[in-house]
Length: 631
Image (cartoon, rainbow, N blue to C red; front, side, top):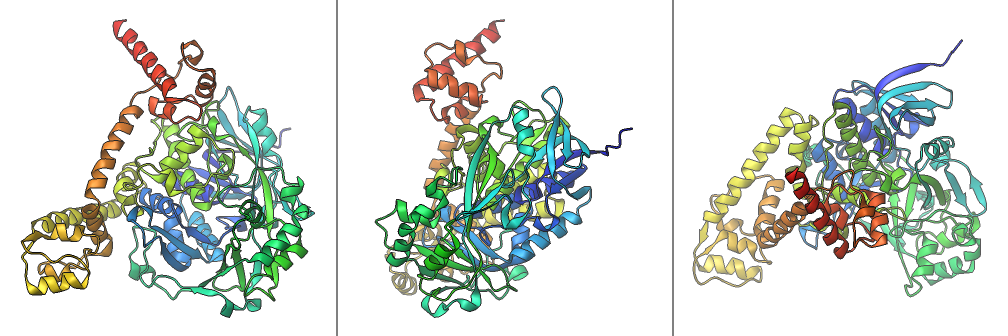
């Protein structure tokens, strides 16, 4: 007698971190029966490392997730304890919103959202294997033997696959925060022909606020004007009293302690085998790699509103506990600090993302998708963006529709996914503004303009929100057109104001648009000249000002995008035989066979494929098209 329990779902999501939550919510909201698995219900949307959402380039991702109809922006607006807009002294392309989160509340609110979403079930269980048949996903099996059949499966396993936490010589075979590791699924993936690799990341110690001397640190307060992450919110909806963060620095004594104990570092002794992140290195890595620097920034950040735990940002480490105490206590303000949780490194299994299509579906297993750190990325925001897109495309797969691809000219999430599936990564991938070629078009302030129509078309943006978006767009257009028609005549009053802003007085009439374009002036500063100006929301006036100030640059970037899209439209046949194309270099043939690009544009971004190879490929594809026309 077979006592195996069996269940049927449309989509199974494995893992309830930031990727899994977005994937499951998306699928359920689109009307498909969904189940999400987690090793612990308490770990839903857990923030095992830094206690913040957003930051440079990551803030762009959060606003794009929100613009498409995802949850992360809404959730951090509910649970933030400090909000700051980064890079305000620079241009709008690199402005990035960052919010400190109450970790427990963030997790609680996301869990509450999942629990109250129609068609979405939550299950605490470990998945031991995927079930496939003829290179097609059929479902998953838990360690207890229960089978969950599904039309699509999304792997969002985070850092849990064969996870190993390391602090000095202390090694525990667990996931973050002592949670159970997922030790069975990796072998099942390997058995199904999926290439696995080993990555590493780390986290700093958490310390007791009562043992910190803040008088020796620089206070970092939140912004007086709060910018919401979600386009559904306005400042008055979320404004609250904020909690300060603090800035201090390491010093030469700190660095000497690290250097004198570097032989005890698992990172340098060979205990850690996984590849770590280049752009978020441990403090021992910073000290050894940047020996010319005599200090590094250390951010002391609250873990929540109702806890004394403080996160020591910038000092991630896997050094032994005694070295951690010596090292942290050498930092001004931390001389008597008590460590609540030691810093540690974590190793985990992940996949080579070159095995994925642009839809995040595996190339050789239909209906199996992957999102988040299993794809070799790092960061909550990168994971959430992938989770949302994997959720969308799992639904497209079930429907038999074409996948939804956000390209590099449409969003940072497009850059993120394209980088992973086209270029691959040999270390944990982190999103950065420098990776986006069209970043002046991909500002965080216009994410709704770029993606909300797509979210509405998919059914993730409701009618009310879409009408509000259309109304906002009308107001932006009307105000931009109105300003073009406003002309300012020279007068003593006008020139006195201009001189007060250190800009050149006018001697002839000038349009208000030309004045706003001046570097010293802004939309707000020109208000005295504009007697018929209406009171508009800041998000509208910000758009108008950016359109005016950067009009020439934006026009140039739009032309670049047109060229980019022209190459993306040059499709490559799925069954193309790269080995038969003469004049292609051997490396190019190998890389093209591995990635299987869908377009000439994607082929041109593959590492190891030269411009000459692209030209050869383009000529060959054109010759195939001519043959097809002659048949």
